[in-house]
Image (cartoon, rainbow, N blue to C red; front, side, top):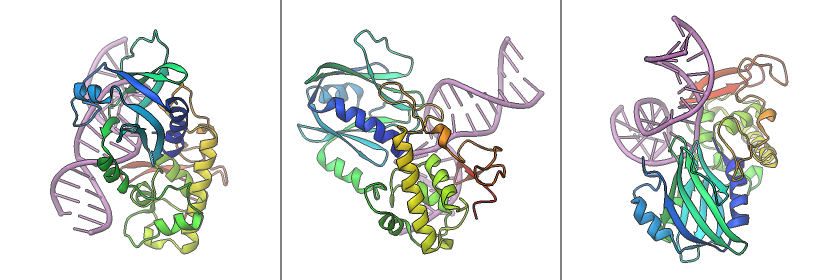
Length: 276
DNA sequence: AACGCGCCCTGTCCGC
DNA sequence: TGCGGACAGGGCGCGT
């Protein structure tokens, strides 16, 4: 479940190694459901070969590899997508879908795209399509002050605050884990209606969201199940989670057992005593 | 129009 | 031990 801290960790690693990297060759190992979306896999390979990556950006949970020739490679990890740097003698694993052979200023590199659940994608888009995609994304939560974040979120709506936090169109990058963690730290129950939050609630929630995202980023993200970075390393934030995945365990503040319910189709964890 | 919900997918875990 | 079913969830697309 890569969210902002995990995707940003991957972005930093990709950016460090892919600047001025020529995509020399793309080998599609496995069809199945086409990871390139509407494009045919052979067309994707042919059109991608020969392009040069200038920089790797992130918007919310979306990775954007800008191309010197214009356009970009877009990649969304969704649940189990992975970019992994591998050695020359690497043998394809069961869920590997494509191998990118790169010529970088530091020599040849090999980058594998793998995805167990096949929700993720890699897509080649032109500049116009790129702008259309980016227009759908809300504020970057770590690139603005807490008040700006609170203002972007604050609205009149009948939905629950948990569902609201997962909506990427106002603020982007927060997913199931960090929504639960931010709400716990702010003392707000996930089922609370958006209309019932005060100005102080919004600001506190913006602050705790930034806190938890920054703290997780420092640990290179959370590996609850599948997530690993481009070197196969797990993130270190799992043990610092206070509610997510801790059903029945004692609340770190008041020792009340953490509850798990479903809100907006998502597993949701909270302390029934601390969060109102 | 905004919002809720089903669905895509496969590995893992649980109960019988 | 084997097996069926529930579960994990980001975001698209559809229905209300």
